[in-house]
Length: 229
Ligand SMILES: [Zn+2]
Image (tube, rainbow, N blue to C red; front, side, top):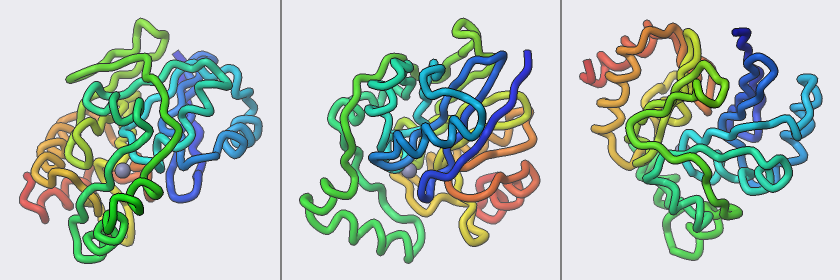
C-alpha cells in the first residue's frame, strides 16, 4: 500500500492530506471560510477536492473544524470525530480552553471575557458528524491503513491518527518557540497521560497542528522536563 501525505498551512493551522492508493483523507480543515483555499492546495498537489473521502478532525476548535461544514457539503466526505465532541460540531461551537502558561492564560482570558466575545471567536458552521468512536478507530475497513486513538487533554475528545512511522496529533502538542507542551488545555494532567500513550507507539514523528514535526527523542526530553515520564 503506497502512502504519502501533503501538508499545508491554513493561517496558523497545519492541515494534512493523506493519500493512500489514490484515496484521500484530510486531517483538520483550518479556520472558517477556507474551502477555496483548501481547494487551491488540493489542485497544487494534483488532486480534485471532489475526490475527498474522509475528514478526520483531531478536535473541534474553530481553527480545526472551521471549514468542515463547507467541505462536507461540497465533497460528501465523511466526517470522523471523537464521540465526546460530536455535539460541539452539531452546535458549531467549542469553548476556548484554559491557558497553561501566563501568555496563553492571558489569551484565553481575553477570548473568554464575555459570552458574546467567545461566541464570535469560537463559532463555526455546524455539521453532522458521520463516524464517531471512543477509545480507537481502525480505518482498515475504509481502505486506509491507519488508526485513530483517543489522546485527550487539550480537549475532551482530542485524538491522533497513526499512519506508518508518523502520528498526527492535532493540539496534543505544539511546536511553538521551543514550547511543546500545548499552550491551551482543558486538562493538563490528561495531556501528560496522552503523551505517555503517544510515546509508547512504535513511531518516529509527531506532527502537531501548530509548528514543525517533533521527533520521539524531543518529545521524550520534553516529557521528562514536565515529570510526565
Ligand atoms: Zn485546539
